[in-house]
Image 1 (tube, rainbow, N blue to C red):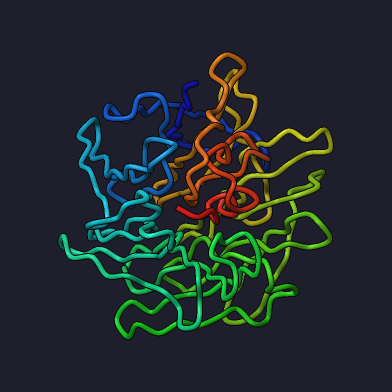
Image 2 (image 1 turned 90 degrees about the vertical axis):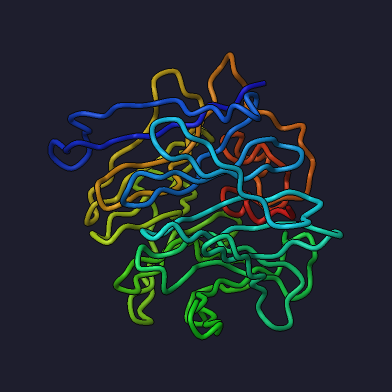
Length: 315
């Protein structure tokens, strides 16, 4: 089965919830044409992600079509590239020897990033200034499925700050951060996910109106947030939150959609599935892919529980 990825340019909005003009462009990794996920985009429009559901094969896409492989040296379980800053520095996740770790890459030099005392880590986003990354770790579960704790990572000092003020920080993920230090992510609450923002230590939880579960997955320097939500019928949609005004993102024919990253120009990257090109869920590689629960970005492995959560899977 093929997994389409999309890049959306939100030109402008009408009112609070209608996209006036949006162009969807399907991205296909030529080295892995049956499975591609776009996970991050910087202000130059450079896109990062990975192909291959079984052994993730990281990429950097320079528009319009130049793919460059990015895989952590000697990683045996694959690499996923999650975020890219304005300077081209990247963050992501790789697996080797059954251990899933986060990484930071600059100028071709890779650095493993694992919080002290953890058994599983993922870096899921980086701000455009390249100073701070967002992610999570589990101290007790090498699969990353339980005990997740959201944190930010200071790239220059190598220090971690756990988001201890979250209503629940036993299964939480920080997925994005902007230049102002605003952090977004989600946490498990009563069996479903609640999105959150963290501004200077003040936590605000939110759900897309009418949803039963919401995950915030990316934020730009304008404070616009993207992610996905599940409605009462169990269908997943992408969303854009602009100052509390929510816009649903759902490419024509999509049956499940995730919006994963947004830059300051309003370009959004993500992925979706449709009725004929069902999402590949056979890849059982422990990778931060997605949980089959939400076929849209989850299909990948089943590590975590959902989108990033889904990403929370062992690589």
